[in-house]
Length: 192
Image (tube, rainbow, N blue to C red):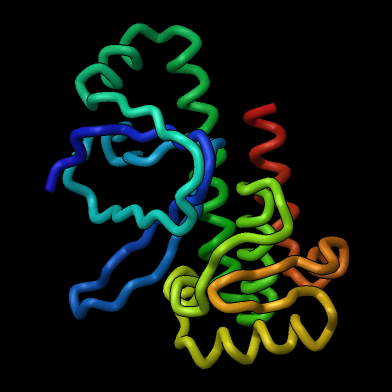
């Protein structure tokens, strides 16, 4: 279905997933109030395979019709510049994620993902199921159970029913791969 609306989150977190021809899903990015949902409209391909899943519904979202979005982009004003900077940061984070998925352990990627969620919701406790985390990381739920268990035994997180509590943010950052800091740096540089 063609993208008809662009969403700017005021809070919460969406995961962007890709589905393969055989129905397997993998998360490719997360978006919070730093970005937008509907990047396919930015590139002019309203029928890309991008699917956004609301993982944490908080706050309001501003909605913009794709035609209005394109008209604003054509004006080449401040909105255009901001969206371009976001698109660059988003592309750089996608490239980093490809490397991360190929080179880093599930435990390190899990720590990184939990930190991403914590940053976007602005607190250490947030709702997130192991099933959702498994889908975002493109792994089996059992792999998340093992990874989250290791992070829990290290005193970094607590797991309650459908909730994650980050107990030691500094320790969790140390347990995450360097991709967390790299991507955070991209966004800080491009969207100060």
